[in-house]
Image 1 (tube, rainbow, N blue to C red):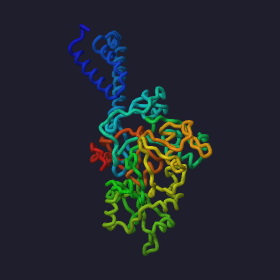
Image 2 (image 1 turned 135 degrees about the vertical axis):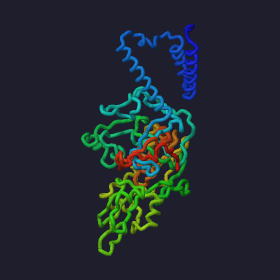
Image 3 (image 1 turned 30 degrees about the horizontal axis):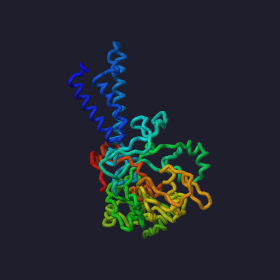
Image 4 (image 1 turned 180 degrees about the vertical axis):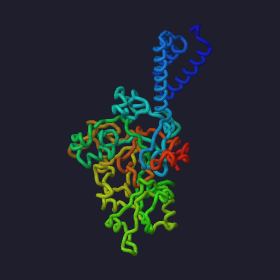
Amino acid sequence: MRKATKKQWITFAIVALLYVLFVIWDGNYWLLLGVPVIFDIYISKFIPWGAWKNTKNPTLRKIAEWTDAIVFALVAVYLINIFIFQNYKIPSSSLEKTLLIGDYLFVSKVSYGPRVPNTPLSFPLAQHTLPIINTKSYIDWPHWDYKRLKGFGNVKRNDIVVFNFPAGDTVPRKVDNPDYYYLVKRDGREEVNSDKAMYGDIIYRPVDRRENFVKRCIGMPGDTLQVITNDVYIDGRKQTLPKMAQFNYFVETNGEFWNEKIFRQLNVSTHDSNLLGIPEILEAIGIQQNENGQYNPVYLMPLTQEAVRKLEKGKMCRSIHIETDELMKQFSNVFGPTDDIYPYTADLGWSRDNYGPLWIPKKGTTITLDEKNLALYSHCIVNYEGNTLQRSGNQIIINGKATDSYTFKYDYYFMMGDNRHNSRDSRSWGFVPEDHIVGKPILIWLSLDDDRGWFSGKIRWNRIFRTVSAD
């Protein structure tokens, strides 16, 4: 200790102070046992932490230096990724035009408070699978219970939120979308679990290792939410549509096929525009034949309200028709199934455009367990809150005790994409529990357009370093 320099004491004081502040933030005061270790590293040096530096073999010394640098970098990245922020890439169009495919985001963990990881032993920057070798990027043991450190605030209505996919707890390795629970509803549990060629092995993922999704939070704990003809109502009050929200429309042109330039004017990417030519569908939409007895070109595309107004005022189209549940159901053989509506265990007559009313669970609130509530909330009770639930005749048994009520221990949220007709969200797979909340996107640091080449506008320069807001 007598040999410690003033610089060593200052360095120790700074590191120890930061460490103690972290322990206070975490609230686990057993971690204060790490202070003597820090003292030894910088002052007493009882343990020869830097003994590798004394080797006379230059090759071994160089290897040790590189190893030391790599380990330090991995630990730093690991801690930053858990407690401060992480990188996230927008993979789908569910939030367009608010966020675009190819946007790279910084997601703040401190906005809502970082979670202590459920699986602390993991490889940095790999969510659940190591690339190339295709194995798990984490070790199941030790497994820590949910704990969230204090952040700058809480989730608010209309926030854009990154969260772990709630229905991603059970995953068929070969089928990412739709989720396991819908596959079981559609194909049967035995078929999904046994057909390895089609679905692969069925694996379980802890909360913090489930896929990251990003949506807009439109429903808060304790709200009663309803969607009526695409309009969202909270506790009976109609909500304002996000500025960049969009719906699918059938757009009949004035007789000409549109090129990429026109789609660009409407802010529609080429992969989102689909040319329709099935007379039965066009007739069901209400498209009339032209004077030549033929149908004008008709495109199915997502449009913002601003784009719709532009088309209505301009001369590029003859008619515009919004996509409806009835039409999609009538032609599900063309457009795909329309039965992926939560809850899968009951048919309540709800649809994508007309959903609810649905009460969103709030921590500490008790509900009566009738048939409808069991359909709506049994997944929360069992899968998210870790209880057992059985039916024995007319009795409901939770954790071995007969009961007719349940009190929630988590807050829940209802998430929806701004691309309302092209988003699999809470209308499809239900609520997002509070322990699944990852963080808040705050900045777009890069944006790449898949429709364009590197020398023809692939980098969206106007989006780089743009902040992400609820608007």
